[in-house]
Length: 617
Image (cartoon, rainbow, N blue to C red; front, side, top):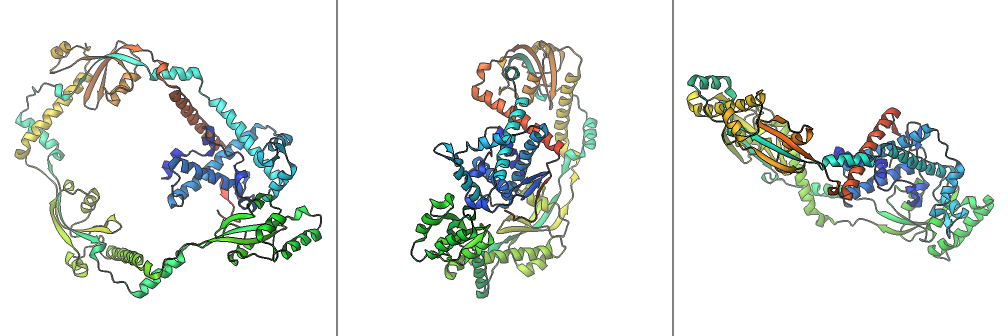
């Protein structure tokens, strides 16, 4: 699966180059608390530090691209896909910082005033179409970023865009080169040809009895009676076992079900008082106390509207979204865990100098199925567990052993059937055939899994070794095989002959022992023709010789042809979409190749390290 995904996803940078939206400033749209508690040293690539927010943004982009590729319903929690997303995220970051390192090595300076000017154009920092210092300040507070951190991220995006444009100009496919290639692709050819097979060879071979005996002796494998085996086949199906379930087992199963349920998600709103907005601790603490004193006389929504200084959540009533106990910092989660719906914590939480008041507005809990209603499902699950345990027990005691068949039946008394004198080809299930013919006589085979509810076990009772059939029984077969071999040899002799070929039916009839030879002439044949095999088309369009008779041995057939004319390709046959697609694919492959060379030279490919002192995503 991962290999397959690698072919479809070559990393964020490559997708940006191929026309898919780049990561530029993607993090601006994430919810406040996704960024507020990120670590800026989450990972490293070579000498570069990666923030947790950048890692999350890249991962989100990978997941979004996966859903675009394979459908919005794709289950990214599947262990295989989860690992694939992790690997693709790392590859994308490595590609990103490969591009950034290229820019840094060019020694180009990006002036701070240029970055500041570009930042001022970002819509998030504008009011009525103009840069607003207060909006910029609030953004930094809400996302817990410094101005330098924001400028660094924007600077990296500029470096990527600049370097990608530079690289794309180096590998761009020029129109003249493309036209020449497309003319070759659309070229047509006139030709004369003949295809000689063993069917064209006249059967005038004189084969003696001694020739047949010699051929029979030299090719024993052609006349073998295959190995045959007799074996018991035992069906290990769950329906063939009678499993009894006690009340204690039902109770334990229900307890396991309850413990597996996800924790309820709580929707939280907050009021945020920002220390930086006040000249002194006294003024800040006074404002916090003012909020506390208003809880008895006002609704939480009224208090948010009146007091909160988090502009990012004010219009939404202070809403921060849902948490399952792992979204926010530990002090927040601890307090949220103790709150019921519509309950407010009147005691503020102080975090990074700011004060927060939390309010649970909604609880999204999984519906719990009652014991009686769950019992039917539990019965199926417990029976499946017992069945798997039974299969494990049989495997440990019988697989590969020489225990008698009777000993097994005494223990389990399961349905079985005796298959007698079966060749490998007689067994329709190739996996079962492999097992049967890979097991020693009077031994038990390994267990073959058919599906979750059915397995097969075999016991080998008899083995008849392969042997060569006697000559009198296969004399006619030997005659046919030897004639076919001589015909193929004759075709090879024509191929190796120095005789100058004249592509005419009279020539072949007079010079060789051939029959029903058809020399044909085709005009305007192109590469998409279905009149020839792929191998024949390849031979016809890889040669540049005109008017020369050429011979190609393809398998056991002899393909003789002469290109009489090459008709120039017509670019009008190539649509603009096909042309654009070819250019895009060509440039994309060149770009990816160049990127891989840069990764090798920078030794960044295996340098990404997640810091152990940060929380894993």
